[in-house]
Length: 335
Image (cartoon, rainbow, N blue to C red; front, top):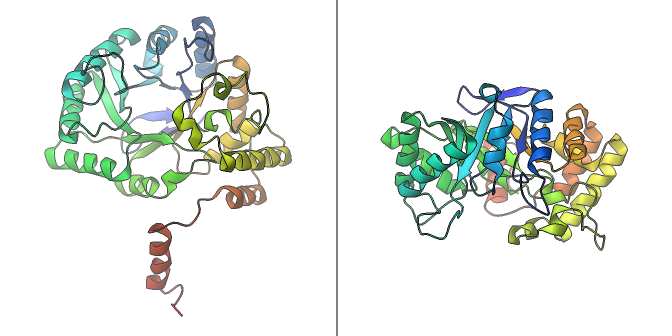
């Protein structure tokens, strides 16, 4: 498995990260014995990047025990910001919660430092200056090595980077967001911003909550899938007419390539500006199928067809600006 430098940092992560959201989750997840076996299989396959969060139930504790004895070989990332209690300071990105959340994650993970500490979701009620300063203090204290942001609008991400530049605080080294063949909206603004500012990108939900595994079809029984067992509000972003149309195109492309739909969807990511893709598994068969995607090569003609089926539609102001850029470069001239 190839290693990639994450953004402007000296941190190297494997091209596939292991997502731990399912660890310890009843009904739609897996027990600790299975989770530990998944972690060991992933590490033995050459992976080094594990992604969890304080809001994922017992996941942090399971991850901490699973990497015991191999901690120095692992890039351990966790997140804060989602509600973990009922109190006003049990959520968000204020200093009081950040400090408490970090201490709690360190304890649950059984480690004295977090490699990559992510803002899980934007908290528009808290000044970004407060969040950036609190995270910088954790880095200076040695409790956190690097910080990243997840699920922010592009202008908010740029504002956070500007605050770091203005105050001398450490910058985010990477952004984490949903990216797959159904949801490609990060291509509109975020990817250009990340390239301009030198940040890395880590993608979550590359299989679109299971929509791109080939199992989920209109009217089909999906009881044994995550969507069938636990559907949340933002699943509507992928479980819709467009999503089913893309899923059908992925099944067709996978048949042509000779791989599973999940492998095809993961292999597609390697041709995108993605440093690491988070794969989630609750069984060894799922993990092995995901790992096998590393050997899949998508022929140019198949990739071109996927692009035609899944590319973002035109929109304003992006398409308008792109047209005028062509005119300004002299590529085209207005009639």
